[in-house]
Amino acid sequence: MPRTPASPSVSVSVTGSELSAKAHTVLSAARHVFLTHGFSAATTDMIQREAGVSKSTVYAHYPTKEALFTAVVEIECAAFTAAMRRAEIRPGKLRETLTDLARAYLDVVLSPTGLSLFRVVVGEAPRFPNLARRFYVAGPQAVAGMVAEHLVGAAAAGDIDLSELGRDGAARLFINLVRGEPQLQCLTHPDAAPSAAQIDQWISEAVGTFIRAYGRESRTDTRP
Image 1 (cartoon, rainbow, N blue to C red):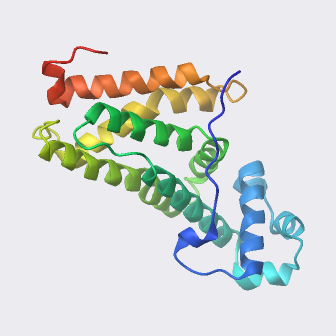
Image 2: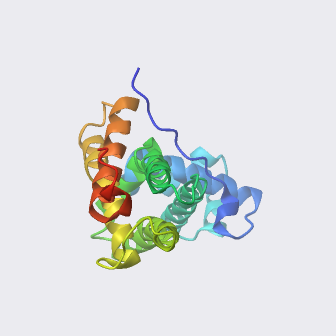
């Protein structure tokens, strides 16, 4: 059976601020409505009904639909980066570490929530460029920063050569290798979830390509 990557659980605490129970309820409802219907088709009335609260309660916590959308995007990005931090890091084992990072990233990016959020943000980017930028900074850029830190450790251990690209360039390249084809296929084939074997192949190709280009182990390891 095809495997659909698990959607990361969302916790309001990841925003770094304490929310009231009512605010939590409104935000959870807005998340469901936005990711199901998109921003333009969603209305505050739909969110109010989903939350089971009064319209005044919605506006008391989030004065506009845009403010609600921003809060949803930020909390989802925080949940995604938290999921990435759970990836197992193996000092001195570059291939295993990159494989774990790639798998954690695809679990997020290819999850139903990850794909829905990407569609919504990209669709609304022309109208809300600042929000799209915040999504990039809080999501893809934050993940690349985490990968960059691991690459620095690998470089210090002599496992990788970062002299050509630098840590940030190498991290962005790795993330793009991992995300490119899998995300494109899932976005354009929404009814066909990738199998576990397909995901393994994508990860192997990305990690192998990166190591052959920049890893010192490639001098003695010819595995794909």
